[in-house]
Image (cartoon, rainbow, N blue to C red):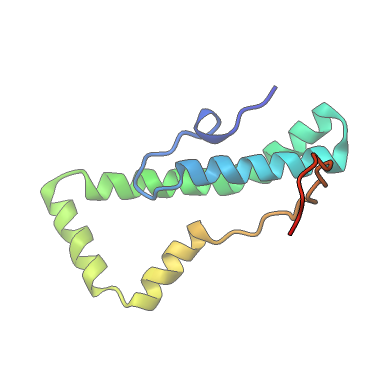
Length: 118
């Protein structure tokens, strides 16, 4: 048995990554299963592959929440830094969390169910 999504790595909502991580987990788990074909090695591989990324996202989200939702002074500093930060820096920061290479999974052909293609 293994966990994925918020059950495996609950994340505060500050980066909006909870559902994204669950989807990434599902793709990586499917790829591990496809490569290993045995339950235990596939699950161990999945855990190893996801641990570093999900831990980094969980930590960053928690830190951002602590800064932005803590004391009013922290919120003021965070808002000021966001406004002063060049757009390119802000984009690189978000790319770290949003952009991530996932394995390509083969698409299984569906049996013809009598549906005509046009």
